[in-house]
Image 1 (cartoon, rainbow, N blue to C red):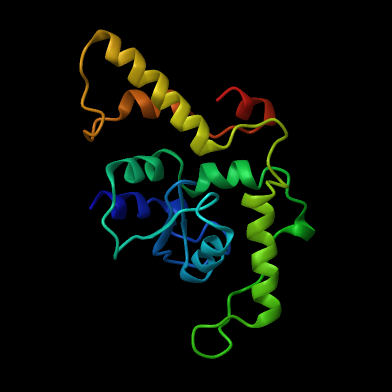
Image 2: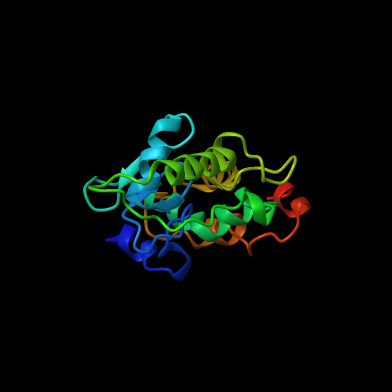
Length: 180
């Protein structure tokens, strides 16, 4: 399906937070793919920050697929990890401490990392617009403009004009995030 096609892109093949291979979960509002361990932390932050869905178990709404294809791990990491000092970056390798639990110290470190990125936005560019918000605002503008010239099926697979305008090359400086 379309979700699996987006997941096959090289930058989406690893968890956006810990780097684990083969993520099978997603934060559909942030536009990132994450592993099972990180999905639990995202859920703990609350749905006002991260809305977690299974890539394989849940039925996906067209707007979720669109968000994942427009944002993705690469764009999200460029924003949320924009100014991460190396000492603050999560470097752990996820090792289970029996069953499906993480070793407690590593689990706490991973949770601090994820909360710093999304809840506190500690490393994001100051005054920047989160990628999913920028894409949503651009989509709203384009839908309004298209509505003025005639009906358009926004749920069709043809999202090229939106993709070009909203998801231009990944910004390399904070000022570029502000102008998305």
